[in-house]
Image (cartoon, rainbow, N blue to C red; front, side):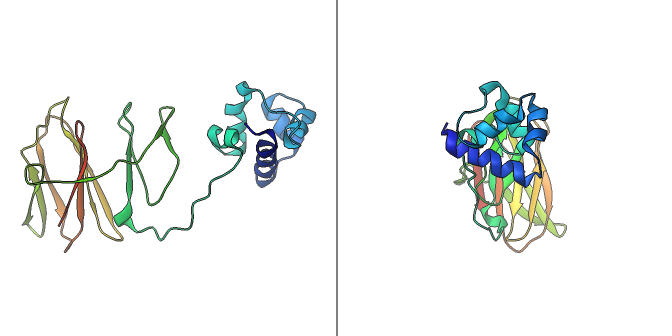
Length: 194
């Protein structure tokens, strides 16, 4: 931890929250002199205070330790470039339109890399009742199944949660073209263009 960088960040984030040093100190159970010391780079908060401090300032603990915010460039939000994150502990599915620090169950998640599906892995997609009928012979057992599928176009994303032992038969509204992605619990994320 660089005390000077972290101190400048604490000061900046405190001011963004329209908070005085005294108000922050009271939230943390320390003196306003301690907060002043941190902000001047003459000391650092005790490690046990970092979770409370990060919550009070609205930043991640990792950001406090690093001493700087990494701001993303403005993104056009093109959904064709959507990034998927899947928590290995709880199965939580998260996504972002650009780079992001994504955490779940106390762990930093990396975006899943989608692999192009070859013939054996590809899903069967046919036009049916004015939409896309999506089916597969893929196993749908508790220990090995497709957990979700998503259909992306430049401005639309549709996500279908799938469950083990249900079989993979679902219907999506018709779009002339797009990208179909799905996640196998053993083999990761796959895609095929429609």
